[in-house]
Image 1 (cartoon, rainbow, N blue to C red):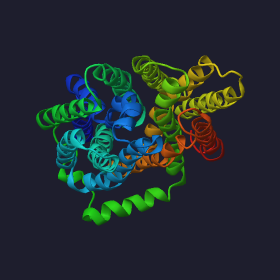
Image 2: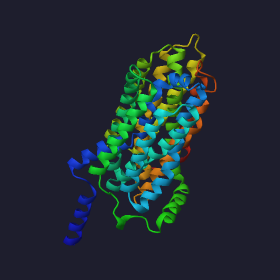
Image 3: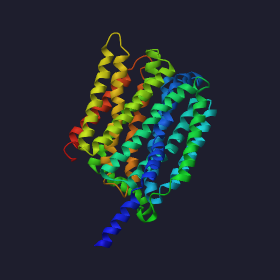
Image 4: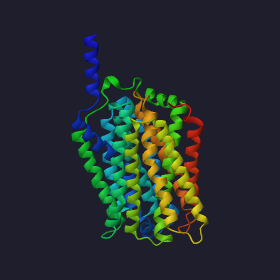
Length: 411
């Protein structure tokens, strides 16, 4: 019995990192998991100038966001299962190198078509950081510790929506949108060096999925048949879909409808990013004190009410800026509360197929955003009706799924 207990303790200590490594994992995995906002938020202030420079339309410019989101979705569904059978390290490093290369190539494009294509490739490359960082988190943690660890990752992730648009707006004071992609390339290469020298393999051969790639992809089929897991993925995907609609439309709405400067928009965007950080920390703090299901439900309710307030602001005459930015703050900040708890609840029983599970969660988040982002610009740059309507549909849909499928089936 003593030998069994000793073995259990040793296995637990080997699985859960010490404090020093724990802090490093938060920093590096948090940065790797921020490829979504990193790839989009930094160049959002430049969308209007990019549209003019490439002689294109608002919708086509927003399609460069869609291309990146589709790349993030498709890449995750391939790389996640691959990492379950072949390990985390090699696909992660390859993705970081490709992200670096495509970022630098974006600086020399002269047409919107090439930019959309490279953004698609950039999204595929960045998906490695997204899906593998979350799978590595599950390799080390489970239960409420996973929720608390993921809340810290969300805090680091949330720094990028705060810093990225500010950096983008600052860069635009001295150079064009091309300079933003140079910075993205340098960041990608820095993360490659950090992962290469400081992130060992977290999934040893003995713990990998058997049956090769075919076995990994068969696990995806079983996950899709798990209604509760898919429910969490759908809630998370719709909440993120609302945020991507905000990302695609807010720069045009605030700068062209309300006359906000690029730097002022960056500050507004950063404030909402801070809301994500704060709410993710609230989720981690509450996870040891109350039901994670209740935290998830509260987040979906607040997001739905915020989206409803945003939609009703359309009927004000004249439309007031404050009536737009306050509801958007609640819509966006709830991403921190919902994502943290939905991810943890969905992943807690998926240890052996963490890469595949993280891929499906990522697929839901990026697919919804990728489909809806171009629709935000249908009305042009002088109305936010499409943005408000799509955000309302996403957040109301997330609340409906929670109420019908998840509230009674989770403890």
